[in-house]
Amino acid sequence: MSSFVKIIHYQMPNTYSQVYIQLVFAVQYREGLIDPIWEVSLHKYITGIIENKGHKLIAINGMPDHIHIFIGMKPTCSISDLVREIKKSSTLFINSRNLTKKNFRWQEGYGAFSYSHSSVKRVYNYVMNQKHHHGTKSFKEEYRDLLVKFEIQFDENFLFTPLE
Image 1: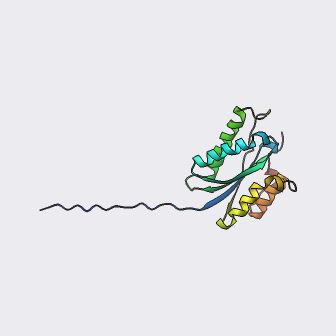
Image 2: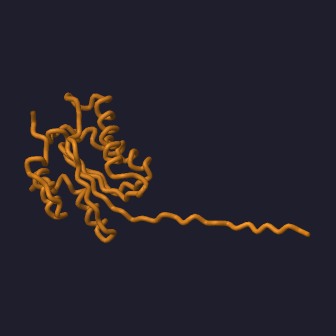
């Protein structure tokens, strides 16, 4: 009598996602500490953090007092964990190279805004045109407008940490 063993191959289902997130956060006290001389190096460094976590950077840009990061996010990491890592590592990057005269810090908190695939090009252009955009609108106005647009309740008194 021969023994018959049937081998069954199970294929594990894959996870598919399409999550587009714009992250926005400010320098502590909204100070203009991000210098155009090293801004590109900072953006490259942050890009490395994002890509090493398995996410796709779509656009990164900002102003001396804040940054916008637009990503295709994988569901393997929480937004708060990613932002914490970006802030922690980029702060160390800036301070260890003495890129500012003051000790650099990001403000606590952040904005995270989700978009559909059909909005990717528009959000990409928005992020990449930050310098032009801020010729007519302050960061505080821009941030407040995003919160209103996304119907996020907030207290005006707690949007930004006041200068001590």
